[in-house]
Length: 153
Image (cartoon, rainbow, N blue to C red):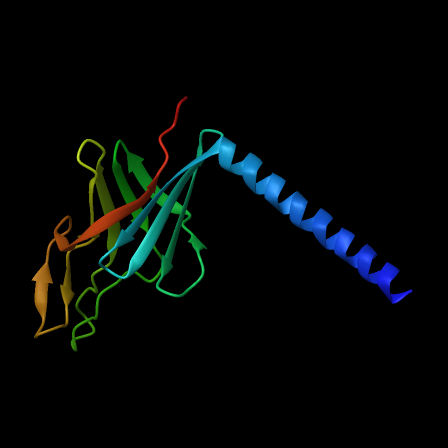
């Protein structure tokens, strides 16, 4: 009787695995993804599924998190991640710098990079207290495109 029970359990496991494989295959047919592994310690994934973009990020050894707010233009991905701000100054009356993450990608060369774009006139409290203007780009880092499946639509 234990052999019959084991065969039934194995059959159930096989059916579950088969379902997962089929679902994954069907999803991959209908989606296109670009994954950027960047020197800033983050990985970004941009999926195009049925002409709708889904954007995720993760830190090293952590789970993927969805990005809700973004501004996308051709080969430029401006991402608004939570808690994106620099260390404030000792003087708490000075504005703290908030930033967006900007990824640029050149398909012709495969070159990609990431940087931070200041969202407000503000002050950063590292190495003293320094003023930064809105729109300033900081911390340029390279990215490797580790998966690029072009769309055929």
